[in-house]
Image 1 (cartoon, rainbow, N blue to C red):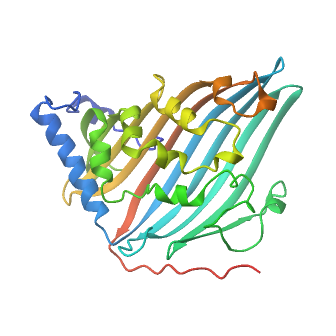
Image 2: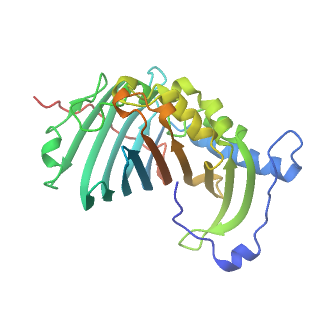
Image 3: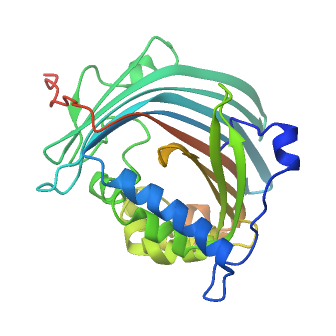
Length: 326
């Protein structure tokens, strides 16, 4: 999703490129690189617990044209926080704790509008305990503070009390386990088009093995499955043909999906996992299901980068259900 570190020029000049299509006829060095990534991610997925730092930046432009007017929303969304996961073999979902702060900078133009707004910071606290999903949102920003209910709320069966979350089906969101879960490595490497290996260093100058994987977005969707993706949304709350939109997002020739994996060569441990998406699609009338918007068109250009850095693996953790607000 986004790149936070650069490889020094000297290291880049001596980088060992491995760029080849990951098919049955892949050369041995490509196979070795794919297997190295698979082993590292599989090992990490077997951890009983882990804690790590999360960072995400989304830059996007959304334009809507309707009745001879075009409105353009330009946004930068930044998130930073921590996540802790404890695997629970007897439960549908791992026990999790996530605490992060999000800020949004946006500009709205067209249709007589010309507004720039800064939103946040807004602190989000999430817990998943015994297959129940809890959320608490806190902020001092007067623009949004009054929109969120105070305290912790159980939103497993719906999050309509929180602005913008009524469109999500919580069970569907939880069904897509993005926490490097078992099986993730096989799905990831099965969708690889190209892989590049570079020896590198971290900010402290310590050696790292870095892998860049270019993935086939359409193959990624095949592995995830459209039902799993559409299950994230309450389709009745969105004026779009969600299955068709998701298929277009993943199949459009402009969509790019890149993953960066950094590994400690001494311990073969995961050091960093970076997820990058680029999308640039047109959303025509065929995807808009609200009759009142007949003839409208939309466009989305988005660059998203998410970075995860483990800070502790297989260390004792305590994650408990919060006290629910009255």
